[in-house]
Amino acid sequence: MSPMSPEYDAYDSSGRLLAEERAGDNAPPLSVSELSGMLKRTVEDRFGHVRLRGEISGFKRAASGHLYLALKDDNAVLDGVMWKGGAQRLAFAPQDGVEVIATGKLTTYPGRSKYQIVIERMELAGEGALMALLEKLKAKLAGEGLFAAERKRRLPFLPRTIGVVTSPTGAVIRDILHRLADRCPTDVLVWPVLVQGQGAAEQIARAVRGFSAMADGGPLPRPDLVIVARGGGSIEDLWSFNEEIVVRAVADCSIPIISAVGHETDTTLCDYAADMRAPTPTAAAEMAVPVRAELLAMLGEMGLRAGRAVRRGAGQARERLAMQARLMPTPDMLLAPQRQRLDQLSDALGSGLRHRIADARAQLGQAGGALRPALLQQYLQRATERLDRLRPRPDYLARVYRDRATALDRVSRHFASLDPDLPLARGYARVMAGGRLVQSVAAAQAAGAVTLHFRDGTVDATVGGSAASLEKPGPSAISSVSRPARKPRGADEMPQQDLFS
Image 1 (cartoon, rainbow, N blue to C red):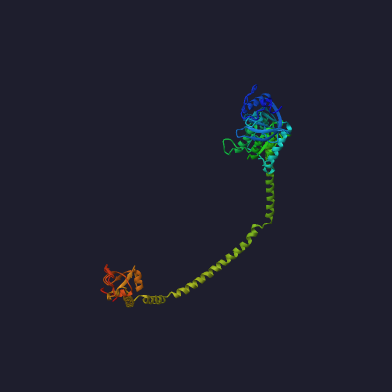
Image 2: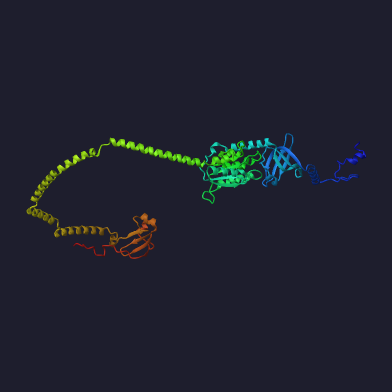
């Protein structure tokens, strides 16, 4: 077909600027939204219910509770979304790398031109996938040290109260109560929970944390031991005890805890985190308390052994005492030296008293001879003479008084000669500036204003010019006469009299 032919011009419009409808064209142009809606309806009608097997990738839980993920195999990837209602019914926690079977319907997301699956139900793809998920979670928790042996605590020997986390309607609680009653009756607190199905893991974790948070002295006694128990079942039935929330609650419990989940061959992650694992719930009750009859028998045996030990010790002590008594001396042998010494002292007591009386009489005779009246009078006379010598004489006191008065008069005259106002009575004046004595012309010039103190008053003066002008003061040298000066002592006043003249 030639480009210049009419047929080419009718069908080729790429060179046109504006779109034009042509004869026979009955397909109007669609909008993007219209085409996206048509695709959405087609996909949803064609694939209204599908089941896909794939591996989870890019898993994310939004704040709204919706789940976003991708299902992939070796050659393709399909986006998926699970709304909050379906996510709450999941029996396991989705993780990347887990193979699942998702049931839902396909739809499109016009906002990104992508198709996706809206998942209504999601299950693990066989027991192998479930075990892979279990091993992955086990490795993660073990890496955090939740299963370490040093975290394990010893169980109390005889707990007064035992807390049990299990279903209140199953045979497990009846077996535990029956076994406890047979072995050693004790108080039991049961926290009822679901042990499988939707929400069981949350209830179990909440119960364990509730027992751990109980305070001493509250309305209910705080358990000394906690038992988490469930009967046997498949791995799906026991999966709630493999959930991370349950394992962390058991590991963080402040009360020693026994895990009794399933039968002896069943093992869950809760068993690894607990302080003790029991093969069955009945065995957990046996581990929790000792046998009361055995305790009583043991106490009786210990009482008999204690009695025998006391009697044996008393018998041995009596034997040792008898042996020591045979080796000890008799009372007569112990008291014989003291009796002999007493006899000797008794004999020496009489002669000693007689010698002491004789010595006292001799001393009394010597002292009596010295107590003659003449000697006493002589002693009295000497004492009187010493007293006369110590009595003060009036002439001596008068002489001392006159000497002290003369010395005081000399000191008074000397003080009067040192009075600074005494020269003023002879025509001298004292020059003061600011409360300080002016002693030179330079000091007067530096002060500028001075005060002249005379015998009968003071005069304020201003210093000007040179030293020569100070020798002949002009009219401006003296400014005014101020208050009368204090009269110097010794000029018009009578001199101080001698008090002793």
